[in-house]
Length: 201
Figure 1: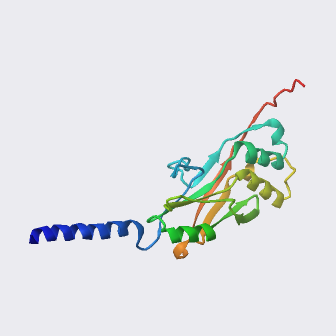
Figure 2: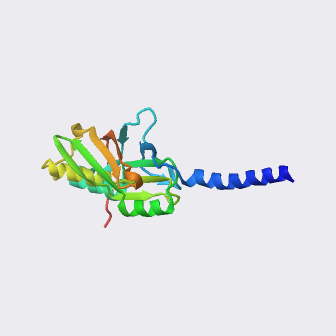
Figure 3: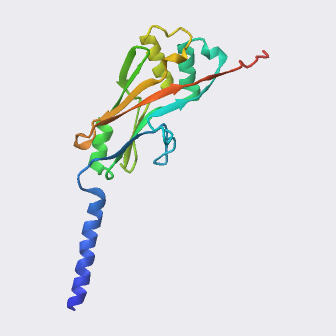
């Protein structure tokens, strides 16, 4: 009978310890990296390996949309939809209470420098995984190019390529435990024009 008690006690101990290891313990940031798209809880569009700190976008832009930064930026926003983003992976999944707190308070910010000007603000997209494993923040590059051009007084001027690379910093705050962090990188946009479609009307 005594050996059976030992086995039974060991099973109970295992049942108590294992769940705690999955959902409790100090919360920290396991990994932070640039990510432009998340699907099914995984980053499906990370920045290229070997050049992690630099992202090169090559959108096809109709020639008519290359007349100004305004036209270029809004075409990118509505059609090519480049979304520089930040993926924050936690050391463990957030508890239900932590997930609620994060959804209410998490904020992500950007800073972009280029052409002698700087723009800052909050990122439009802030997404937490349903299982509380990670955070993803993102925004649309097209709208940021328009805002930067406006800051430079060139919103209605033809876009110039010598403004690149842009320096970009993405940061996060408002997470449980006061977790904060940021990551810096460079962004280049190498667009190429496509002929205007003919109208038969």
